[in-house]
Length: 446
Image (cartoon, rainbow, N blue to C red; front, side, top):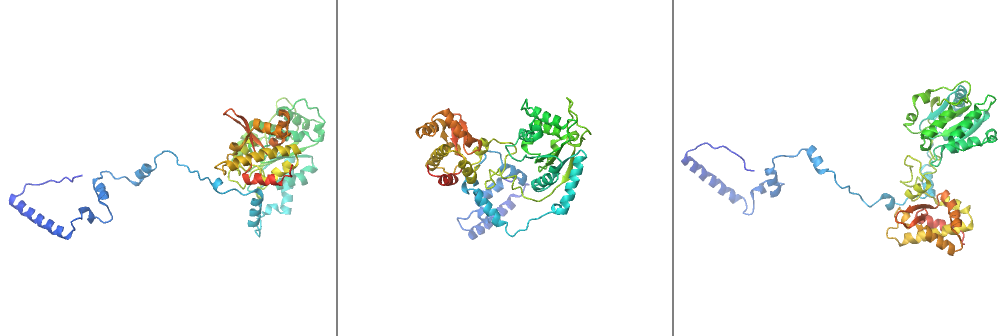
């Protein structure tokens, strides 16, 4: 942009003399500067275009403006180089060996609370508080499963019946807990007119609320803050049982926001001196909070997860069905688990597994992207599987084939999905190519 200047009237002769002086100075400068040089060459480190652009700028962006200029929202650039495809996860056995070798010579940290004398004092305190009408909830860093099981075995079993619920398992639900309670011999002799969870819980409550009933029951719930027990129905049933003076709950939590699961009235309500079986039941937990920091690893709690895989190390915060978990996690089934399942089924079921496994391996080898984690694309249609099973005398009708598939589906060794394209049901085995090949080699020849 041309610079603006103001000029005053001057004498013409003086102006001519000044122009002569300027021409002489320009001639002297032209002798020093080469012919191919330009005025911009005197600005070191800048090209002519950059110099002209700098001279022509009116507004210069600040660092704040430049950040938003170069970080405009647009199409997200994603890469196809997925880590789980570039680096294959370890097998369960390989993971255990790696963890074992890395922890050799390392002395585990044991808090003083776990020493023999301190544990006896803590257990006696727990039992006194339970007898006073409270329920116990334990928090802290580390697995509390072994300590609470020890308390149930050494102390609670001498005072009454004991039921232990592993709430951290993804397939656990409140009905499993009620069924375990009803398997206790005194309750087992009762008539069971209905199997709904509400009537089951009411029947258990009324049994221990009877005036002639002297037995107590102690329910140990590992991870009462787990997803299967967060539902409103599960919390309501547990609150009804916990308010019975002859039903005692000892629970553990690990989620930092677990106290938000219950209202203040539920947490601080007290049990009545005598149990009642009125139509309107009071509900509440009467929690007493105890710090039970053990610093122990969560090995047993994580047995259902594939810790050798990035995608299989968590459950996503909600209960997943077996098919959904296997479809999202390629390594949902380990070699050891598959071998145990196949060892317990019939020879026809093993032949059916071989048929599906060989078809899946052939499809993987023929695909360009053999490392893909989407195994559904290598699955086998149900109609095709039924046709080949009938030709190989494995299953002669649809009912026989579904019966053979039923046990595999229950254990998650074979999963299925409905295809929207109209080709019906597709079945596949949720195992990587290498693991599936190893399982096939371990099977006896048919």
